[in-house]
Length: 128
Image 1 (spheres, rainbow, N blue to C red):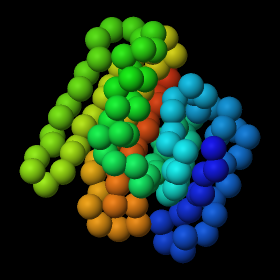
Image 2 (cartoon, one colour):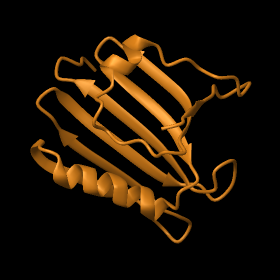
Image 3 (cartoon, rainbow, N blue to C red):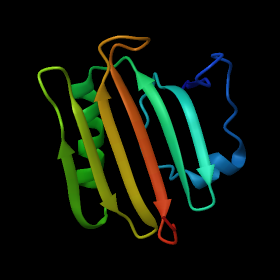
Image 4 (cartoon, one colour):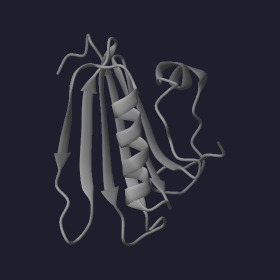
C-alpha cells in the first residue's frame, strides 16, 4: 500500500513511527489510495483519519465485509445516518482486545470527492 500521510495544516508528510504501526491492529483494512490526515495515539488507543477517492459504497463494502468476516465478541452495531446529501455510517464491534469503530462519510467536495474514514481502536482498559 502506498499511503500518503499529511497533517491538516501544511500538507507535509507525517511519520507513522514503529510504535504507532505496532499498536494498530494489522488486519484492519485501509484503502490502497489512502491519504492519511491524522494519526493520534494515546495510552490505550489509536485513531487514524484518512480520505480515499473510492466511491463511498466501495469503502462501505470493504468495512462491511471486514466486520462480517472477522471474529468479534458480541453483536455488530451499525448506525446509518445517510441522507439524500450523502452516506454516513458507523460500524462498531468489540474484539478480545478492545473496541473497534469505523466511521465512513461521503465527501462530495475537497481532495478526494470519495469517502472520509475515521478508524478508532481502543483497548479494553480504556478509561473515558
